[in-house]
Image 1 (cartoon, each protein chain N blue to C red):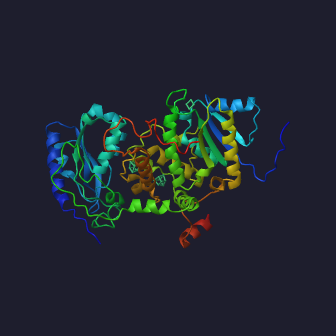
Image 2 (image 1 turned 30 degrees about the vertical axis):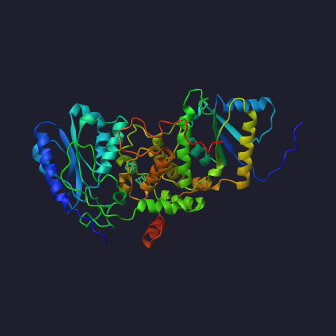
Image 3 (image 1 turned 90 degrees about the vertical axis):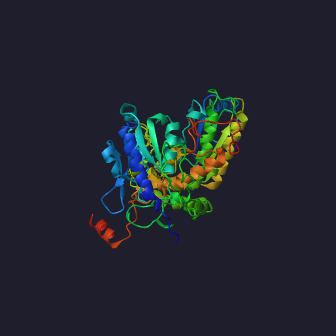
Length: 305
Length: 166
Ligand code: SF4
Ligand code: SF4
Ligand code: FES
């Protein structure tokens, strides 16, 4: 079993503390969103600090799985009033922020980005004290191409160590693609039937910021709201469609799902298709328009008669 | 004189989402020119293909459609200039998603039919109706709609007991 070296996280934690203290003291920012130790050994929880004294609480470890960008979308209206905000971001979280800036939800000048040279985080925090190995690492980290975030205001010293490991999403997508439509239908039917419509996936997603979700509307009701197989199916298809070309791949939806539905598989599949169709990758640069809000006159139309 | 009407065992329900400026006018032309086409199609008129949300297609299948046709102005002819270009991307993406979750794309047809193409409208509707007739009813969504299910299976002794006790 391949172990992943995370010793650099200790130094990174120190650097975050020092930097947070500095920017809070000299007034660069009014708050810093980061990670702090939680109650169980090894576990980590999000924290918002506003005083330099609290900077010592900040850290980064293999348990720092949360995508903190969600705190900025849900609190975005407060940002101009409270001044600049510092935020600790991994590469995948940064992708979400870049997407949100493109969608005019956030402004770069209102943020102070503390980037993390990240070697990976745990897939599940049920046992936060486990070693980071090829089995316990989050599958998204195996497919990550932004271990070293770029364009941040501050990045601690340290080089991410990332051994080549099997790409689980890519392998699973390939497996499903090779099945017949009927087999795929029964696979997803079973998966979606598990859904209890708790909407944790929507709540945690930085991109699900609509004031009123289409799936909550009842006049007309497009998606049945009860957790029955039919309504679940529609919810999942619409969710995947509304995130196509926007999803940053942080896999938070999949992590928070209490029913273990492989949500990010759908997201990755859509990302792959949009790359093939329109050569688009989400989160790499600030684009005003996503692939589904623009067009090219020469787009493929071989499927239209 | 009407041609002899053939009897079939299965009459598919086809829902057509069309834009009012081109395809709807095309279908109108087919009508006023007294062209014959299957009456299986139910036409729903929209201002533009850009207004046809993928969720409508899903809803149509869920409500019992066996086939769906989406049709609008040819590229460059959209009344709102670019509605159909946007729609084209959206539908290309949505098709991929439906395919991935196991929907047979043979039941879903996209086309460009202009106001002058009454004949093409007839051809589109006839083709899709006959193809879907050959495939039989779309049972997947109907089964799904009929199903009541507990989240997860009642697969342990404990759960079974609890279930019996209700
Ligand atoms: S859909 Fe899931 S993986 Fe994508 S940005 Fe939202 S929470 Fe992250
Ligand atoms: S988090 Fe899981 S169970 Fe909850 S609504 Fe999303 S997919 Fe369904
Ligand atoms: S008006 Fe016909 S497609 Fe836009």
